[in-house]
Length: 127
Ligand SMILES: [Zn+2]
Image (cartoon, rainbow, N blue to C red):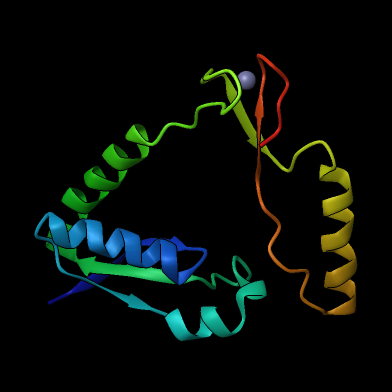
C-alpha cells in the first residue's frame, strides 16, 4: 500500500474525526505525528507539524471529495440572527493576538491556542 498525506490537522481530535468519517465511507487511513502534536501543540503549523491523515494513493481522490463535501455541509451560521454572512479571522483584537505570537516567537515560549473568531456582518456579533 502506497500512502500519501490527505490533510494535516491542528490536533488529533480533528484528525480522528476525519479518520472516522473516512472509515464510514470504506476508506482506510491512519494518523502520523499524533503523539508529537499532542505533546507540543504550540508547534502546530511550524515546519509542517500537525497530525497528518494518511490514505492509500488510490483512495486519495475519493477521500478529498468526501472532505470537500463535508466542508460544504458544515457552513457556519450566526447564533444570533441565523445569517450565513460570516467572516473568519482573528477577531477585533486580532492585532493583540499577532503581537502575542510575535513576542512568544522571540522569547521561544508557547503562546497557547489562538482561536479563530467568526464575525457576523449582519448583526456585528463575534462568536
Ligand atoms: Zn448575526
